[in-house]
Image (cartoon, rainbow, N blue to C red; front, side):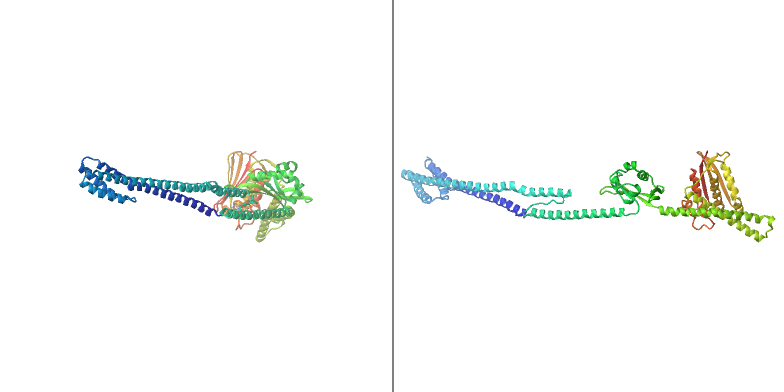
Length: 575
Ligand code: ADP
């Protein structure tokens, strides 16, 4: 039976019984009240009138007695309720009429008394009879009220014991099952075969649990499939890859990585990288790199040299820190790291070949250029013969080109030295004044051609610096050469020397076109030239300068404003 119907029926029955009980009780109380009222009005009053008439007959004052008799007789005449009472009252009236005319007739008086006693007896009998009826009514009331009350009690008792558990038990079972589902126990089912609302609820719950179970199972298999797919993908990658969890424990490693590490999967998986670093140097390098990359903002990437594939191989290492935003949280959390080693051996080999080629060509070109310069010098000599103006001009332009070629081959040779990591430094105490004088002399002709003069600002005393004389001179010459080349004619190039905090600053300031802010960082890159630069050049001078100065532990920087010239500053340590 449905819960709603059950509740309506039981509570409805209870209500009906309470109403029934009220009606039965009310009805009997009303009947009892009517019975007692009847006795009081019908018979008790007649007894009172008869008693008053009897006492009137006995009174000595005849007038007062007759009046009392008369008034009570009238009341009795209006209160005839019993069978035979009317005849007796009528006789009483007749005899009272006679008695008023002859008050000394004792026979009449006795008859009046007998009549009154008759009325009294009649009413007394009636009272007795009516009280019997009231007693029966009371008994009946007791029986019916008891029956209805017992029924009410029985129904209330049954409801009290059954209804709460009928409602609460299925709810308890349901709550328990929902908790199990929340704990991902999707196989949970509710067995309730009742046909009420709870039965329907249990059925819907079972359907939901079944669908959840199906969904969960399909998800797990899908996830397993996806995991397999990703594992296969990582394993088939030609670059070595390994993954670590947040505690830096190896969780996956592909075949290429195992090959270069010379280890097997069992040794690595679920092992801390710190433990593996103890047995394997490459692991140590990788472990260190994670810590460095976690703290450094932009690490400088240097390829790692590893003996792999039977030759010296180069790998560029990339560390990815995997972070996720956990559900309900506000901050990202690192959940692991992936290390990818990109095999760049092929590019390195090509790069070596290119560097070698440039070095060889530059070297080979130097000798013929030097002999060209020598021949030019001879041609300029009057002893071989005089040159006319046109010839002298041609000769001057050949000399310019030869100088430029020499500059470029020199720069190319320098860059090959840097690229192959072979910067040979001979650090010694160097006098900054000498450096500046050397550079000014080297650029003199170039500056004179543009009528540019140099102005030097220096303190009275300046310390010797810790530097490679030749390379630093090359850098200052290059800065002066740039200042001259990128300045207008008839301008001044300022050279400032300054000493501060055990460091010497050499600045070269021109009043040329300046450099736009977006190119300031790029001009130190190899082969970079500010777009639109018309003067000849290779874009190598500043990058070589930076490498040379940094190799000596110094720094090179630029300050420039477009249209307002540039200041290049070299900072080197004092001896
Ligand atoms: P380049 O041989 O082209 O001069 P550099 O490496 O010496 O090569 O300079 C790189 C670029 O920086 C130049 O091409 C030029 O555009 C810019 N540059 C260098 N020095 C100056 C300067 N003093 N004033 C303006 N631009 C300059």
